[in-house]
Image (cartoon, rainbow, N blue to C red):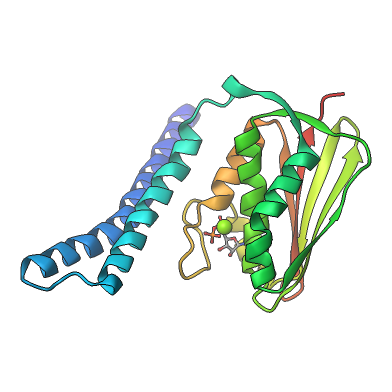
Amino acid sequence: AEDLMIQAEKMNVVGQLAAGIAHEIRNPLTSLKGFVQLFRSGTVPNDKFLNIMESELERIDVISSEFLTLAKPYNVDFSPVDIQELLKNVIALLGTEASKQRISIDTSFLNETIIVDGVNAELKKVFINLIKNAIEVMPDGGTIKIIVENSEEAVDISIQDHGIGMTDEQLRRLGEPFFTTKETGTGLGLMVTYKIIDHHHGEMKVKSKLNEGTTFTVRLPVIT
Ligand code: ADP
Ligand code: MG
Protein backbone atom coordinates (compact mmCIF):
# COMPACT_ATOMS: atom_id res chain seq x y z
CA ALA A 1 0.00 0.00 0.00
CA GLU A 2 2.91 2.30 0.79
CA ASP A 3 4.46 1.75 -2.65
CA LEU A 4 1.17 2.60 -4.24
CA MET A 5 1.01 5.81 -2.25
CA ILE A 6 4.48 6.83 -3.35
CA GLN A 7 3.55 6.03 -6.93
CA ALA A 8 0.40 8.12 -6.64
CA GLU A 9 2.36 10.99 -5.13
CA LYS A 10 4.85 10.87 -7.97
CA MET A 11 2.06 10.99 -10.53
CA ASN A 12 0.67 13.94 -8.68
CA VAL A 13 3.99 15.79 -8.77
CA VAL A 14 4.44 15.07 -12.48
CA GLY A 15 0.86 16.12 -13.18
CA GLN A 16 1.27 19.37 -11.27
CA LEU A 17 4.53 20.14 -13.00
CA ALA A 18 3.05 19.41 -16.43
CA ALA A 19 0.10 21.67 -15.63
CA GLY A 20 2.49 24.38 -14.48
CA ILE A 21 4.60 24.21 -17.63
CA ALA A 22 1.55 24.14 -19.90
CA HIS A 23 0.08 27.12 -18.08
CA GLU A 24 3.26 29.19 -18.19
CA ILE A 25 3.80 28.52 -21.89
CA ARG A 26 0.18 29.09 -22.75
CA ASN A 27 0.10 32.66 -21.50
CA PRO A 28 2.70 34.00 -23.93
CA LEU A 29 1.24 31.80 -26.70
CA THR A 30 -2.22 33.28 -26.17
CA SER A 31 -0.75 36.73 -26.38
CA LEU A 32 1.16 35.87 -29.58
CA LYS A 33 -2.00 34.42 -31.14
CA GLY A 34 -3.77 37.66 -30.32
CA PHE A 35 -1.15 39.64 -32.20
CA VAL A 36 -1.42 37.37 -35.24
CA GLN A 37 -5.19 37.93 -35.32
CA LEU A 38 -4.68 41.66 -34.91
CA PHE A 39 -2.27 41.81 -37.85
CA ARG A 40 -4.54 39.62 -39.96
CA SER A 41 -7.38 42.03 -39.44
CA GLY A 42 -5.30 44.85 -40.85
CA THR A 43 -3.38 46.34 -37.93
CA VAL A 44 0.16 47.16 -39.01
CA PRO A 45 2.86 45.69 -36.76
CA ASN A 46 4.84 48.45 -35.04
CA ASP A 47 7.88 48.46 -32.77
CA LYS A 48 5.82 48.34 -29.62
CA PHE A 49 3.90 45.25 -30.73
CA LEU A 50 7.03 43.56 -32.02
CA ASN A 51 8.86 44.18 -28.74
CA ILE A 52 6.07 42.54 -26.79
CA MET A 53 6.03 39.60 -29.19
CA GLU A 54 9.76 39.24 -28.87
CA SER A 55 9.66 39.15 -25.10
CA GLU A 56 6.82 36.61 -25.15
CA LEU A 57 8.91 34.38 -27.42
CA GLU A 58 11.91 34.93 -25.16
CA ARG A 59 9.85 33.73 -22.20
CA ILE A 60 8.89 30.50 -23.93
CA ASP A 61 12.53 30.04 -24.86
CA VAL A 62 13.73 30.55 -21.27
CA ILE A 63 11.16 28.13 -19.84
CA SER A 64 12.10 25.44 -22.37
CA SER A 65 15.83 25.79 -21.84
CA GLU A 66 15.54 25.74 -18.03
CA PHE A 67 13.64 22.48 -18.22
CA LEU A 68 16.17 21.13 -20.69
CA THR A 69 18.86 21.70 -18.05
CA LEU A 70 16.93 19.34 -15.79
CA ALA A 71 16.76 16.68 -18.47
CA LYS A 72 20.43 16.76 -19.50
CA PRO A 73 22.76 13.97 -18.42
CA TYR A 74 25.30 15.56 -16.12
CA ASN A 75 28.14 13.11 -15.62
CA VAL A 76 29.39 13.46 -19.18
CA ASP A 77 31.61 16.52 -19.02
CA PHE A 78 32.89 16.50 -15.45
CA SER A 79 36.33 18.08 -15.30
CA PRO A 80 38.45 20.05 -12.81
CA VAL A 81 37.02 23.55 -12.31
CA ASP A 82 38.89 26.39 -10.58
CA ILE A 83 35.92 27.65 -8.63
CA GLN A 84 37.35 31.07 -7.72
CA GLU A 85 38.30 31.68 -11.36
CA LEU A 86 34.74 30.78 -12.32
CA LEU A 87 33.36 33.19 -9.71
CA LYS A 88 35.57 35.99 -11.07
CA ASN A 89 34.18 35.36 -14.56
CA VAL A 90 30.60 35.45 -13.32
CA ILE A 91 31.23 38.67 -11.38
CA ALA A 92 32.75 40.26 -14.50
CA LEU A 93 29.72 39.13 -16.48
CA LEU A 94 27.23 40.70 -14.05
CA GLY A 95 29.33 43.72 -13.13
CA THR A 96 27.71 46.16 -15.54
CA GLU A 97 24.21 45.18 -14.48
CA ALA A 98 25.19 45.56 -10.84
CA SER A 99 26.85 48.93 -11.14
CA LYS A 100 23.88 50.29 -13.08
CA GLN A 101 21.96 49.66 -9.86
CA ARG A 102 24.76 51.13 -7.74
CA ILE A 103 25.63 47.71 -6.38
CA SER A 104 29.21 46.73 -5.70
CA ILE A 105 30.31 43.13 -5.41
CA ASP A 106 32.88 42.48 -2.68
CA THR A 107 34.83 39.27 -2.63
CA SER A 108 36.70 37.41 0.06
CA PHE A 109 38.64 34.65 -1.66
CA LEU A 110 41.20 32.10 -0.49
CA ASN A 111 44.83 32.42 -1.58
CA GLU A 112 45.08 28.81 -2.65
CA THR A 113 43.46 27.41 -5.80
CA ILE A 114 40.26 25.50 -5.11
CA ILE A 115 39.38 22.79 -7.60
CA VAL A 116 35.93 21.26 -7.90
CA ASP A 117 35.09 18.29 -10.12
CA GLY A 118 32.21 19.60 -12.17
CA VAL A 119 30.56 20.90 -15.29
CA ASN A 120 31.88 24.40 -15.87
CA ALA A 121 28.83 25.78 -17.69
CA GLU A 122 26.42 24.40 -15.10
CA LEU A 123 28.36 25.71 -12.11
CA LYS A 124 28.50 29.07 -13.85
CA LYS A 125 24.73 28.97 -14.11
CA VAL A 126 24.40 28.36 -10.36
CA PHE A 127 26.33 31.50 -9.47
CA ILE A 128 24.77 33.61 -12.21
CA ASN A 129 21.34 32.69 -10.81
CA LEU A 130 22.28 33.40 -7.19
CA ILE A 131 24.08 36.69 -7.87
CA LYS A 132 21.32 37.86 -10.23
CA ASN A 133 18.75 37.17 -7.53
CA ALA A 134 20.85 39.15 -5.05
CA ILE A 135 21.05 42.08 -7.49
CA GLU A 136 17.31 41.96 -8.09
CA VAL A 137 16.42 42.31 -4.43
CA MET A 138 18.61 45.39 -3.91
CA PRO A 139 16.90 48.09 -6.03
CA ASP A 140 18.42 50.84 -3.88
CA GLY A 141 21.97 49.63 -4.33
CA GLY A 142 24.47 48.42 -1.74
CA THR A 143 27.04 45.69 -1.42
CA ILE A 144 26.84 42.02 -2.25
CA LYS A 145 29.48 39.89 -0.56
CA ILE A 146 30.89 36.72 -2.01
CA ILE A 147 32.86 34.68 0.47
CA VAL A 148 34.85 31.53 -0.24
CA GLU A 149 35.78 29.39 2.74
CA ASN A 150 37.41 26.02 3.25
CA SER A 151 35.48 23.37 5.05
CA GLU A 152 36.88 19.84 5.29
CA GLU A 153 36.98 18.20 1.83
CA ALA A 154 34.59 20.87 0.60
CA VAL A 155 34.37 24.53 -0.23
CA ASP A 156 31.66 26.91 0.96
CA ILE A 157 30.68 29.76 -1.32
CA SER A 158 28.38 32.33 0.26
CA ILE A 159 26.44 35.02 -1.55
CA GLN A 160 25.26 37.60 0.91
CA ASP A 161 22.84 40.40 0.07
CA HIS A 162 21.16 43.17 2.02
CA GLY A 163 17.93 42.98 0.09
CA ILE A 164 14.31 42.54 1.11
CA GLY A 165 14.82 39.10 2.66
CA MET A 166 12.21 36.37 2.78
CA THR A 167 9.33 35.16 4.91
CA ASP A 168 9.29 31.58 6.25
CA GLU A 169 6.67 30.75 3.62
CA GLN A 170 8.96 32.01 0.87
CA LEU A 171 11.90 30.08 2.32
CA ARG A 172 9.87 26.87 2.30
CA ARG A 173 8.90 27.32 -1.32
CA LEU A 174 12.39 28.02 -2.69
CA GLY A 175 13.21 25.77 -5.63
CA GLU A 176 9.58 25.01 -6.36
CA PRO A 177 9.00 25.39 -10.13
CA PHE A 178 7.36 28.69 -11.06
CA PHE A 179 7.50 30.07 -7.52
CA THR A 180 8.28 33.75 -7.98
CA THR A 181 7.48 36.99 -6.21
CA LYS A 182 8.69 39.06 -9.17
CA GLU A 183 6.46 40.61 -11.77
CA THR A 184 8.40 39.16 -14.67
CA GLY A 185 10.17 36.33 -12.87
CA THR A 186 10.05 32.76 -14.12
CA GLY A 187 10.54 31.08 -10.76
CA LEU A 188 12.81 28.54 -12.42
CA GLY A 189 16.26 29.82 -11.45
CA LEU A 190 16.48 28.16 -8.06
CA MET A 191 14.86 24.95 -9.26
CA VAL A 192 17.70 24.61 -11.78
CA THR A 193 20.25 25.76 -9.19
CA TYR A 194 19.25 23.05 -6.68
CA LYS A 195 19.28 20.43 -9.43
CA ILE A 196 22.80 21.34 -10.58
CA ILE A 197 24.18 21.43 -7.03
CA ASP A 198 22.62 18.04 -6.37
CA HIS A 199 24.35 16.60 -9.43
CA HIS A 200 27.64 17.94 -8.13
CA HIS A 201 27.02 16.15 -4.81
CA GLY A 202 26.84 19.48 -3.07
CA GLU A 203 24.25 21.21 -0.96
CA MET A 204 22.82 24.67 -0.49
CA LYS A 205 21.76 26.41 2.69
CA VAL A 206 19.74 29.60 2.96
CA LYS A 207 19.55 32.10 5.78
CA SER A 208 17.19 35.01 5.45
CA LYS A 209 15.68 37.77 7.51
CA LEU A 210 12.83 39.90 6.27
CA ASN A 211 13.97 43.42 5.39
CA GLU A 212 17.57 42.60 6.33
CA GLY A 213 18.89 40.29 3.70
CA THR A 214 19.69 36.80 2.59
CA THR A 215 22.71 34.53 2.45
CA PHE A 216 22.86 31.53 0.15
CA THR A 217 25.73 29.12 0.92
CA VAL A 218 26.72 26.52 -1.65
CA ARG A 219 28.91 23.65 -0.44
CA LEU A 220 30.77 21.67 -3.08
CA PRO A 221 33.19 18.76 -2.65
CA VAL A 222 36.75 19.67 -3.68
CA ILE A 223 39.51 17.70 -5.37
CA THR A 224 42.54 17.53 -3.10
P1 ADP B 1 12.86 34.37 -10.15
O1 ADP B 1 14.16 35.09 -9.91
O2 ADP B 1 12.52 34.27 -11.61
O3 ADP B 1 11.73 34.88 -9.31
P2 ADP B 1 14.14 32.20 -8.71
O4 ADP B 1 13.91 30.73 -8.72
O5 ADP B 1 15.50 32.69 -9.03
O6 ADP B 1 13.06 32.82 -9.71
O7 ADP B 1 13.71 32.77 -7.29
C1 ADP B 1 12.42 32.42 -6.78
C2 ADP B 1 11.99 33.38 -5.68
O8 ADP B 1 12.83 33.21 -4.52
C3 ADP B 1 12.12 34.86 -6.01
O9 ADP B 1 11.03 35.34 -6.77
C4 ADP B 1 12.18 35.47 -4.62
O10 ADP B 1 10.90 35.54 -4.05
C5 ADP B 1 12.96 34.43 -3.82
N1 ADP B 1 14.39 34.80 -3.74
C6 ADP B 1 15.41 34.23 -4.40
N2 ADP B 1 16.59 34.79 -4.08
C7 ADP B 1 16.30 35.76 -3.19
C8 ADP B 1 17.11 36.72 -2.45
N3 ADP B 1 18.44 36.79 -2.60
N4 ADP B 1 16.45 37.55 -1.60
C9 ADP B 1 15.11 37.48 -1.45
N5 ADP B 1 14.30 36.63 -2.10
C10 ADP B 1 14.90 35.77 -2.96
MG1 MG C 1 16.09 34.32 -10.35
